[in-house]
Image (cartoon, rainbow, N blue to C red):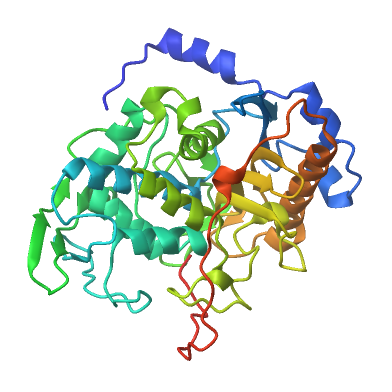
Length: 429
């Protein structure tokens, strides 16, 4: 992962991409919304580090889609913390790795155990939220998508390994992506080390052992990223300096949008950007990118806490439900005052579809790690208004050909009403 950038070329690159991109069509659509919170954010896009990508999808007579992105204040160099959106590429990479291992009996449903192989690492030999009480890649992905579980992210990271994660994404063309850290407060050295993993047969006998890994590649950090005026460190001490995100995870909004598109429409992204997934993987991903916690038996989430729109920010409002016949295939993230949603939205009754990606920073006191962010006052209301503005626009937009979106009609699970197990009320996410 060594990259060479001459000073003059770096300067020229920054000049080219320093100006945020806004398209007239999207600007016109958004400024038609008179909601006070919405207007406040649009009037101060730099303050809120706002970025939006609206992907218009049009079908031809043969139902083949074409895609056109419209941008609002988009700047690939304007950092936002990707937080849990990084769980999407990690899920895809884990499935791809399984498919390329070609080991009989090893698949996403195979039980696997994690050993502690280095300082700070933790073992994991069971999972009380799964039906068979054992961990698996499939179950980690479910938890990562349904409620954005952090342990699931860490285990996917540990299975793929830091070196494989980054080199594979770079080889696919996502060259500015950096996945440098687990959500465990690790040092850079600890993040380079990942656990030994053991796949097991159903009878408990060993099937395959993956040894611990260490990333020998170097990372390239093209520019310093500091945000805020103060922050609390890991010892809960107030530091009157900005927080340094230079070495944190990094994904541009364009890249994470393209990664989601590669899952939903693999034939309509460049071949190198696709992931090596089986048909069953796609069906599995479509289900859990769009299924509600209330429809899921394992894990059995408390639906008062983890309601239908809990991780559907573009439809998250007081009713906590989505419109009938609407499904959102998406991944969200929230951390340090950043809120992000990357979605494909489909309305089966009205036969409309579009993609929408947005990120916003809401931290009026400019102190990070104090757990005092303006999520409820500004962040969630803004993203809801954004989603509804684009949804209403799509409902009215004329199309030459209505899409056949039956590919995305998923047979969802149903919560077992006779299940007396206690619900899960708290998740580290």
